[in-house]
Image 1 (cartoon, rainbow, N blue to C red):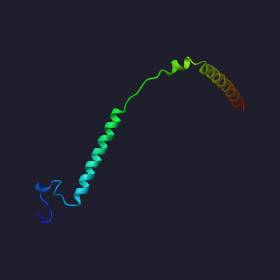
Image 2: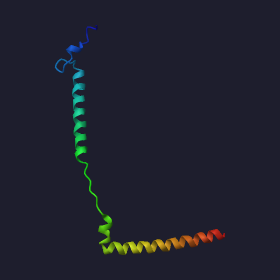
Image 3: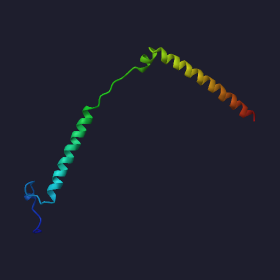
Length: 90
């Protein structure tokens, strides 16, 4: 036995060496912090389902914007096909 080391039966928070006491307190604080964070995340998990298609179908502005977008898309695809045909001829 080493004379400077305490026995296992002597280890309790009241008679720990001065170096070990802050570590013991830090471990408790870390454990408490982690448990609080986990409980917050567990109870914060809520979600909702929104039928965006139903909502957007009820908006006339959306239909107009979608029609314009489809028109631009069609024109661009036509232009790409024309340029691809010109490249294929080369």
